[in-house]
Length: 440
Length: 161
Image (tube, rainbow over all chains, first blue to last red; front, side, top):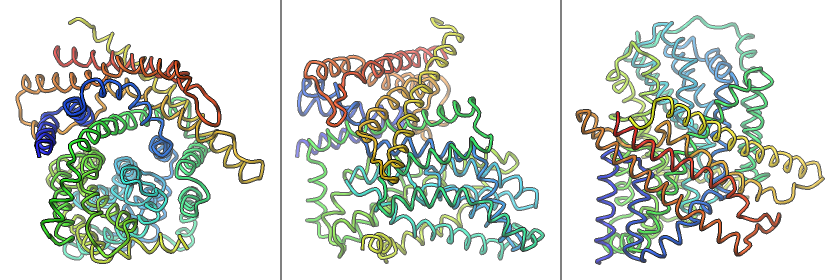
């Protein structure tokens, strides 16, 4: 019990540090190291720190992260975003709200080769936002559809958050990617439906634009072949088990970089910039990963995860009540924290609890299902106030749209997100049928 | 001011170059992996130890990214609860925050050379390539030194802001 109190104080100190602007990775590392020293002694801690970071950073599974980040960087420079938006626009633009739908479609396509939401929002924003404004789309609808569309970057595989989740709970990354496919498509469909509802109520928000001739539509669609090829090779190869996720990421980065180079978009300076951006995102993520390792080492010593499992199982609460409470906690924390920190912080305690409950599935299936639900819910934080990063990014591009308007505009999209979570909670088969199909 | 703006800029530039070189190592591992897969596909067989190359390169690359990330304040923090604080208060908090990063970096700087020495002493090597693990530290330790320097500079920068 004493150790549980120590774990509790550790978490309280951690939260205060985090909320007082201490970088999250450092806060986690310090609390973890301090607690570990208190429980196991200073010498074991000092000896652990000698190689803890080295071993963690030498992980084959984790090498997926910088490779997918690099692939995303190349993708943002390859000029693929224009082709994606133009293709989607050819088929959707002449409907009311069609350009916003095309923006979502473009995001979905870009999300299929990019594992980061911020990069997806930023890249598609640059292409789609000027067009949306040119055709008099309302500020709120323009920025909100791009901010929400950006989350498809991580919902549609490849997805960096999903890789981290898989490593934390020792799930198969390939299976997680398979499971994310249908929910990712559902997300895009949900966003398109949200736009349809918005333009039905406010027809002026999203006027139709002149249609393109059919021949030209198909020609524009053909222009997205590089995206399709890369997606099929990378994700298809991972799905089919032809190569590991790391190999898939290496091929993806290679193909995307190669395409950018052939297109003349990858000068030495641009390559250096791609590497620099990859370095910063990777450095940021891996400091948090190190911090989470330290913290989880400490929490495991206190027995907090076991304690949480016992308390919650003994309380006789329905598994669904527990799940919903966790979802609410994710949503609340998502408002102030980034999705990756949240996954690294919460999953080591949440997952053992979920694993101990009976949802009428095998443990492996529960793991997959819970991961996808957690992914969707933590990504909500990107478009909710007060720190929706996607909103910030898109809003910084649309100077004439007040932030408040974007936050209001994004509400219909959040509603579809919540409906989708409810749907997946009620029907785990939506998540599980692709992995089951591919396993046979 | 102990350090001039020029000094910060130069240090940041050095860190950026170091990170790009680390990124280059990652790209090399990427290319070797692609060659390995192609080799497997056309029947020549994979490159021996391709997994190990990826592991070694990732570690080298990630450590090389740390100093630059620190210099450009790339580490995520939560700022919603402190948005409306007056500047002096923010400065104090940021000094504390940067000190926290510095403690982590200094722990690495103090302990990791000993870790490298352990690898050297016990002759730890990878299974397939029989690559001596301490070799990586020839480039990892300079990354840690740069990171520690960057984290200390960040503290001074906050104090003098």
